[in-house]
Image 1 (cartoon, rainbow, N blue to C red):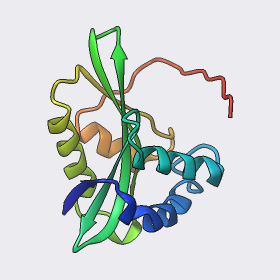
Image 2: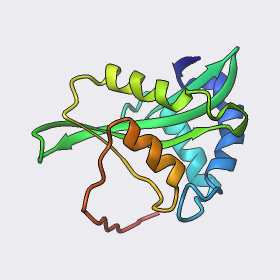
Image 3: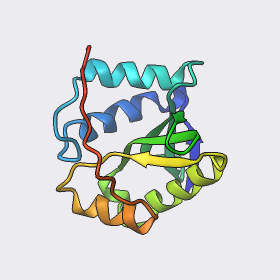
Length: 147
């Protein structure tokens, strides 16, 4: 397995598998494709607020994820938010997500906290995240969307 920062050569495949992910039960709501496309374009741009990663095996894209960072006051430093982790069905169970976490933990070793979100009934994802050391928070979250 190889992990690369998303680039324009990945665009078509990322958009294709993003359609699968963003309409799956890994999310609690559907994400409009114009927003998916906007996110991909931001990740491909010089805007470092969203960094896209692809997982490759024999030059075939097996999955993707994004990372964004911000200051977390509770820990007094950088928080790495891992977003939209997806591994294509035919590559699941082969350690791609675990390798990606190791990669992110190493790349952002100066971070004071790593954070992610999950759908509460996604038991497979929750099990993996706990094995990687994540703990559940008691916080609820609230949002105002201005899409």
